[in-house]
Image 1 (tube, rainbow, N blue to C red):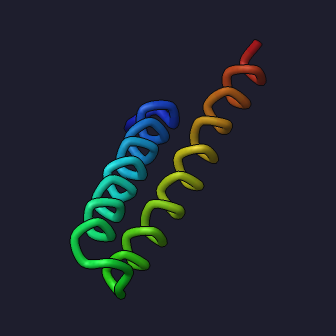
Image 2 (spheres, one colour):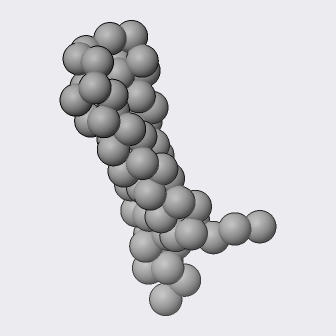
Length: 64
């Protein structure tokens, strides 16, 4: 089983990747359906990543 810190970091990285692709898509074609989809995916990944990282630190604090 992966630790919440690793999973959270992975989600944050995916959020940056989706953000990068959204910016590239806007530069090439302007705003469209795909850009909004990428922005939504990036937002969900950032939220899940932050939640998992906070869970890691909360579990670490409770173990002490």
